[in-house]
Length: 137
Image 1: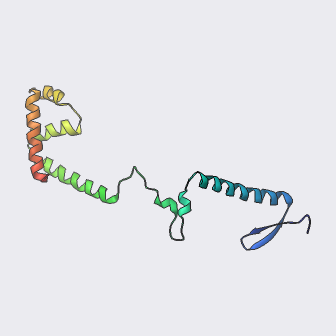
Image 2: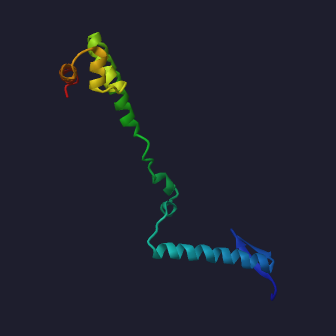
Image 3: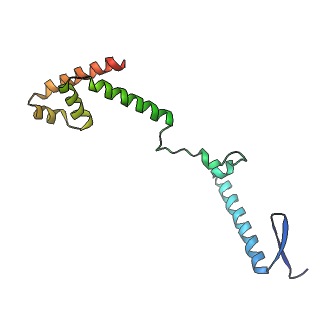
């Protein structure tokens, strides 16, 4: 048997050259070394949590994505907000649109409308108070 090299592949023993034998077992030893090193450094891979019913990597959450429930609630609130905004007087709707959706400052919008910034602020606060009543916040 000297000079013959065998490796087990699944349930079968296969004869291979010395080079393949050494490469195969050195790869296995390298993997074991890396696992031992990770264990000593207290590293854990999600793949270590694999079970027949679950792939451990599926436990990773996407921090950028919203839960479907949150998306549905956000859509419902958005729809309701648009319905309520459509019920505002045209001037009030323009103020809310310019300040909150277009990003204008109170100072710029007041100048554009030809009114004092303080007057605009008071109108904005009144409109928001009315919206809070409708939303029951």
